[in-house]
Image (cartoon, rainbow, N blue to C red; front, side, top):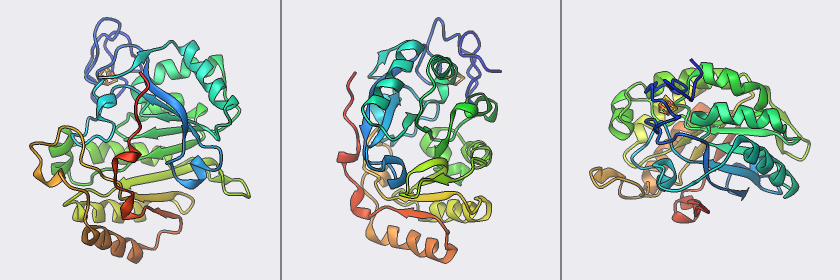
Length: 289
Ligand code: SF4
């Protein structure tokens, strides 16, 4: 059930690979990262003043064709580290003044990350930053160490998720995962830094207005009042998109306006809305390893 060694079933792909010998569908055997450091492009209560202490993990079990971190998610970059080294990175980021420890796409390394927390428990909040294609059983194991969830809800339509990730059950899996994550209570400092809570993200895609509307309507019905929604316009053509003509441009002003009009009608109580001008490669980190 919760196994990254023989017969791995840690994520919903459940590919059953023996990760002591060979990488799984996620592309990974042992713990690997491509970068860590202070990151200033998260939502304001996460980056806050000192920056979020982001750790970018290699590999991915979702694999969107348009992945904005393509080299990383396809395991083309990275350096193997031990859980003890990861624990030292937690401490180093804290000493650098990070506002939090931000685990970026960590699910397929949940076992090793829990081992690292057993060695060093950060004194700053821990952020779990995920595409949400996650097993609730795995989330339950790491949840005691997590203060803030930062999940994406990427697609509503099974046809669209199948087209872009090969998985028609994305919404079914991700919505169950987010239902679990949204139980984190909201706690903020008076200055506006998040200490605990959930921010659900949605990236608007080119030709994706109707799916975005469906995602937002679903979230309006299901998100608790305490949860934040973050709607992002930063889609930048990237990745393995030659066969997807619709993905070869940023979203248009008209597309974003249509999504924003729907958002306005839903009146989310806690909302971050990105400027459409946020599209561009400056939001794509360069990798260290
Ligand atoms: S985490 Fe990787 S190896 Fe494990 S089930 Fe998922 S894809 Fe397979």
